[in-house]
Length: 546
Image (tube, rainbow, N blue to C red; front, side):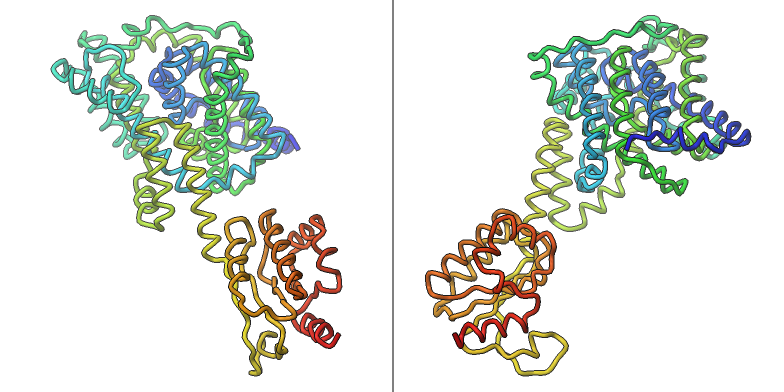
């Protein structure tokens, strides 16, 4: 059910909480300003588009979202995707892709895929997140070093080759500003966490460049003046040909946005002891991206760092997110034009810090040292993200993870023949005598297409078929179409040899339902489906006597 958290939180809303939300919203709004500008520039679009996104999408995510404290806006994770779309399809293509992604997110929410997204493999998430961090860092080398060169190539290797060719144009002033920004952002939390270090770095470096006329590139020198108002909304025209071109990058935006927003919501739940609504959050993210594109913005999602800042400063309701968006709007209207004076090297320093925080180096190393299958998914996704494309990385990573999971399931699945035993024990296998002329096989694990043929091979090696074959299925939790087919083939084969088939202890409701749908119970005979092994052996004795 679509039910925004704002509705619930306003029921018993107090003045004390309102004051806390206002303070948190103001602080997060100030924190979001340099990040919105930096993310937009790194994505290959003009800086104001990042501010537009933070205002419009941030407002909608807070009003309609399924989390009490989620802060929405542009994030570093989208830089790689957005930059690639802009390079290939232009800004107009990005707007359309964001619009389509918004529709896809709404569909995902309405079809209740919010819970399913949580099950995306962790190694895959760490792989592409670390890969994105590497790409963000490499994209900021030009501005950090103040290199005089044209547009930076999109390809990772060509990017570094281009840097090497222009090393002679290094600007010492830009390096000094970038290093100062890095040190200040890293060390400022030791002084206070009330005011973000990125804002202090921007103020100091901007004043230094302006008053000392330092020869470094600024936002204004590259992009010109920043508008002091929101643009008029324009609904993008989506044709069938455009849809065919942009559906794949739009799907990547939607998938990445859903993953990051729900991860952020889960982290927030852990910090406040809350419980977000996944599908409501996805629908809100969808509307936010649609409206962002209408106002010329870029993709938006839940921002983990800004959400955590909101919580740490007392924000506990969506009102804080609304105040954050209003704060950014006021800054745009009255202070936005001064943003043109910000040095590009300062923004590069801020983004390098963002890349470091995104890299999750400890988690990357931990997964890499874990199981070989997890390490394979991690390295594959990371490598493809950096060297090929994020869309390809997610697709191949998911396929590889699925195959490796099936391999694990095949390894845990087994088919064993039960031998005669007269020893007393708790297990019914050891308390029941298996009559001569009866074979008992037990299947352990899911009987799906990966493990079904292991069972079939075990049946084929039987040299002298008994008159009765009992298949014990007490530890078979699920069965798929291939498992059903193999069971049917085994039944046909043993029936041809004059052997009766009995299924024992089909405890799983799912397995029983699939057997009924496939009419296997009818073919085998209801009398040959038994709830215990002892009853199965009694039925086998009746068949032998008959």
